Image (cartoon, rainbow, N blue to C red; front, side, top):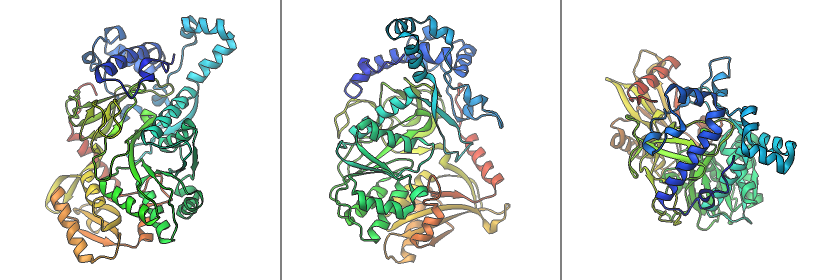
Length: 513
């Protein structure tokens, strides 16, 4: 049974922290009792194994008894989909028939009407999946109920980003069974606003996207930072004008301040006035994306604005698994509060948020809702390298990406990890490939890159190689890959896998993970 007409849903962006927490707790317990535990094979078994009943959950401390889930739990045995299917809510007809809501619905709408409503709530009709970069792709199923929620989150995304219903939006996310494309598509539907989806580079290529940019003259662009950068750079090179552009909404990659500066500069070259650039944070497992609101140029963003009626976000210590106080860094953990289809509880995202969870009013838009503040980085982006005589050095590629994006003299870039002389027994090498943003002295830029790397990670790249824009597009897979490749590991697969395994082993896992 949906709770879309509840007090929390009707006031999702203007309730104080204590009220939000109280209403979330009530909604969570109802969701567990009526949807998840009766109809999820995995979670029914898990709660029984740990002796947890919904009626035993009385406080938020009790909620921490519920074990985490992770991508490892979702990965199916090769040749079988049984594991992922265990996370799908499959209703028991006998249970539904005994419910008062079903009986009352039959009296009001008749048996056919009730059947139609239940099918809309529980029958899977759409599938997205994870990108499969670090593991096998994991499918996630949506029912019509979930698609209605996707339209709701899409409408809220438009509202938070301060769009207008009469604006023209251009969705440049790649057409694929991935959340980013569908969230942007349903944002247009939910907001009842014009939103043209180009399908990204794989469908129309960079050239086709530039032509649509010129023809549509959009007010807002939605897409991945690297691909949008290449499209705007090509548009500038062709002398295209886009004076109506007012918003750029980004997803799928990190968006450091350096990338925002570069995009603003390109927008100015296209004849646009003030352009607000906002990032979103989303994941397949959440079935939604959360946006930043517009902030003045140079100001710290207000964080990712969450929807407290649709999901519960916790921030935990990545080592102990305990929930940390508001404002402290940690790993993002997600639990849906109104999802059907595929459902995970206390899902460990592997994403670290530097500023933690905040509940005070947003300093820019004034909304009172939970926000994730600061930079998001991936646990998996910390890799173990054997560089020269230094064995097992842990390198945080999140920091290296920020270093390169924050250098205005660098346009596009790629970090390559490889073995010296392609010999598996040799030490690792770090090669930085760049396409300069402007004419620059190569030796000066190389020294600047080495200096920034040493300041950030205490290592220096073995080589800095220069390329033109076209070569860099090909290296990154612009228009070919679902996500442009900015960090590539060309070591033999066995070596790269050992590096990832060593990194996982160096990060303690909580007892109930």
